[in-house]
Amino acid sequence: MKEFNEIGVSIDLVALGTVLVVIGLIFIYALRTGISPMPSSAKVRRTMFDMLPDHLEGTVFELGSGWGTLALPLARRYPNCPVRGYEISPLPWLYSWFRGRRAGQSNLKFLRRDYLSADLSSAALVVVYIHADGMAKLKPKFEAELKPGTLVLSNFFQVRSWTPVQEITADDLHRSKVYLYQI
Image (cartoon, rainbow, N blue to C red; front, side, top):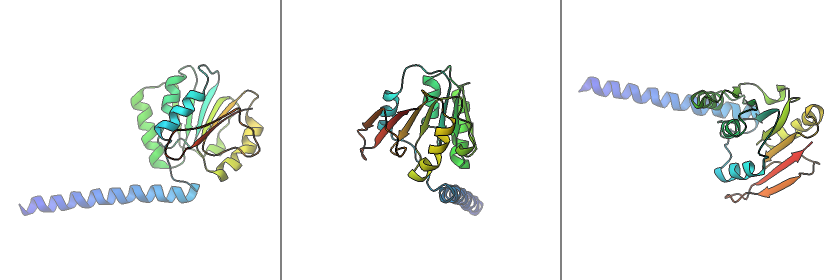
């Protein structure tokens, strides 16, 4: 019985160590990026998808794709469009990468890269849920790289000085605003 307890204690220590590493990695990348990976709520996702057209031609980008909760349904909705999720935080990226592999969506790729390095010139749609400072950094990139007609869909954070073509308040706990812009 003593051996079982020692094994049990060892397993508990390994589990605790794993949890601490996971929390530590998320914390370190939250400090690095200025935000923790936070998925859009189901109600906000529904609002976002209701704002999108039925058909697109071009690449769909999710910048700061986190756990993949938007990129995967976007790949299903637009099976003829390449969908690219950019995430720099290793654990959310790994989780979404595995989800994408299991889903078998051949048009979907999750890239562990900084979204500021993405070439957006082929974009038909860019989806973002990025804090105000990140949006301020993205604005000149959008203006330089996005072609006329490209859609930018943002959860909660506006592109300053841009006028959305549609703005909807989601029926979620925070009454989150969703903004759709067109270049």
